[in-house]
Structures are given as C-alpha cells and as structure tokens.
Image: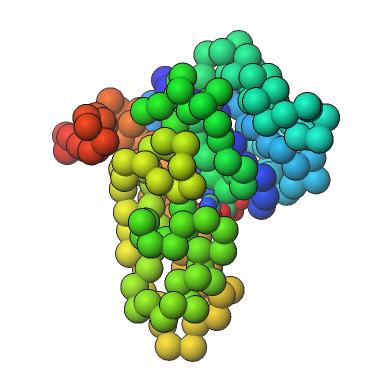
Length: 203
Ligand code: GAR
C-alpha cells in the first residue's frame, strides 16, 4: 500500500474525500500523514477524527522556508512517505521538497490549467467569463500550479453562478478526481516521461 502524506492549509474537504475513498474502496494506499501550516485549520480536526497523524508547524517559528521544509522532509522520511498530495496547501514549495519528490508529488487545482493558476482560481474564471472551467491534478515541478498534468475534469459555468455556487460544483468534481488520480498512481499505472504523463488503462 502506497504511503501518502497530504499537505493542506484550510478546510480539508479534499483531504476528507481522499481519506474516505482510501478507506471505503480498494485503492492500494494509506493516508499516513497530514502536513499543515495552520494550527487553527479545520483540516486538523478532520485528521484527528480520522485518526491520521499530523505534522503541524508554524512557518514563523523557523528562520526560513528551507528550514521548515527540511523538517518536513525529515518527517516524510521517518514515515516512509511515497506520495505527497497537495490539497489546498497555500504555500510555494522549494527544491528542498520538489527535488526528492519530483514525480511523486501531485497538486489539485480548481481550474483547467494552464488557465487561472494561483489563488482565487474560481473567481478568476468567473471574472474572465469562461463558459467551461474545471479541475486539474498535476505533478508538482516547483512553479505556481505548473507541472505535468495527470487528470482533468470539466465543470460548466452556469448562468447566474456566483463564486460560491461554482466553487461548490468544482469541489464536487475535485472529490471525485483526486481519489481517481491517486488510485491510478497507487496501482502503478502512471508514468512520467519528458514532462508528459501516460496513464495505462485499468483492467
Ligand atoms: C481546493 O479547491 C483546491 O483545489 C484549492 O484549494 C481548495 C482547498 O479546499 N487549491 C488551490 O487553489 C491551489 N492553488 P479544501 O481545503 O476543502 O480541500
């Protein structure tokens, strides 16, 4: 079973959806660690009630981003983590983590990348007036929401949508797509060559 660490900073609905999918289905994976930079975040309580160990840190307690990332990498090594899932982790990640985990770290983003990277992707899509947006799961390469794409799902923008109503449908799509992408990886069906991802069909 693939040992997974989820990094999250906020509500943690994707963390919850992934944890539940891993428990309720036959995905050969185990959610072994939550890494969180916000002690007050709701995701911390979710991890507690799901019995997932948490590495909680305050960036302000460290002299630099590299310093807390080194601490995180030590913790990932101790736990034998094989895949990192960024699910609403609202910090840039440096080479301290990207280098050792390239090809073994994915991010979920609430837009069809490369459109609307960064924060507020749902609002950006509404403001632009696109009729179709969606959800992307991609490998992390150290840029802001860049990197080889593993999976995408389209979500239609409806007449009269607000940020809330659109975000709700985007979240629903994320809660399906993230467990699916994790399943593909855990089943060894995903290969990464020359920045392109190939997914072998399942049985
Ligand atoms: C998700 O919609 C995720 O795609 C987004 O943060 C949300 C976290 O929700 N991530 C980004 O915008 C990254 N640029 P959650 O805490 O309920 O899972």
